[in-house]
Image (cartoon, rainbow, N blue to C red; front, top):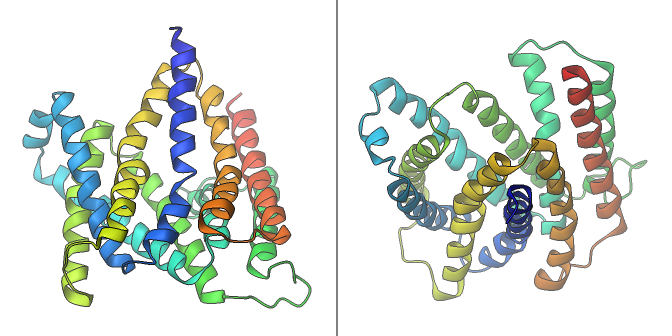
Length: 296
């Protein structure tokens, strides 16, 4: 099979699986608390990543990690998977999935804003336009189309969903500065993230085996949101002639996710959600093309 064809197959499979997770979040939260769900999914993901590390012969690299490496992994693991998913899962517990999912998708725009603040990158007019377009989408979704009244249907929930995108953008900024192997980094992040999550469950909740009704959701989230999909996406990028050839497929994920939320979760998708998501994605695309023009 041609190399680029294999890249597309990996990318399409990954995007398809990512499109299911918003529904999985919402359905699983019907059977357990968000901290319990995170702990179970983190353990599943950690087990899957351990198998991958073992299969790729990277256990020695983990065993020889320096104290500095471990400290870095602890800090990154606190951001993701711990803090990011705590905030995201809490958002899903108080918002309809059709609102939490697109609001969380603002992370590329948050990345632009944080890069300006942290990395001192210059402010460009294209970035200003991208931010304005995406945040107009946030406003449409958060007010369910009642923009002129400026009345938010669930402001705390919207802030949680947006907060998760900020944490993910922070993680992305600091993760790219860590030049260790991606799989090794991810495994160690989940080691520390699972420890933080266990501590949170023991302190704030109750440690128990996931109920049978939520066990499938925990397995699905751990494997296809946090675990092997990252590896398959990395494989797609490595096989593709250019990153853009597969990365553009990601834009289909939030729309496919809305389709699944309607048919699996049973939510009636509001026109304001679709319009808001279109604006958010449009802003992200404007920013992506601005970045490519700058590199060119």
